[in-house]
Image 1 (tube, rainbow, N blue to C red):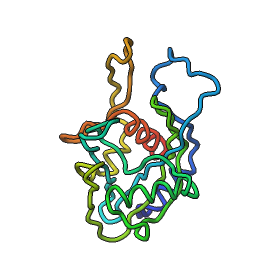
Image 2 (cartoon, one colour):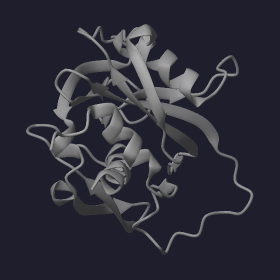
Image 3 (cartoon, rainbow, N blue to C red):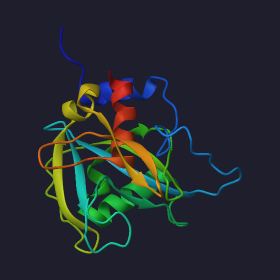
Length: 197
């Protein structure tokens, strides 16, 4: 029996029931304020068709928020963006030089709520053909690939913790070589792993 192609496997993952996630999933003692307003944002889970690797970035050390962290290409949804998909494609073009014409959007996962007040829509997509990233120096210090098989293997995820605002806070990590993938990026990937297992 032949293995289904990448698009079919990703579509199958999206067909599985999933749920919204948040930076608070592992911290049941946090009471979220009712009526809070979240800023819409989107990220691109870009999987290379040829190598089945996910494209990730290291955020510039000069950024005010989340400096030096591992992230998907993405950001805040602008008023000119038609929807989260348009936002994710625009941000990926701006941050890593990915031409939207190379991107086959498969669909979107449920939004992820961050501790910083964003509702991030992860957009799952396939990058067709060769792609050489061009990092936007003000935002991205490095672009690298991680095999999809690594990121959807639930055994590779760990729960770790650190003190934040005087309390121990827990979060997912999915390390890969020298890259410490954690926080919202790891939680979004954990949701994808659950759907693909």
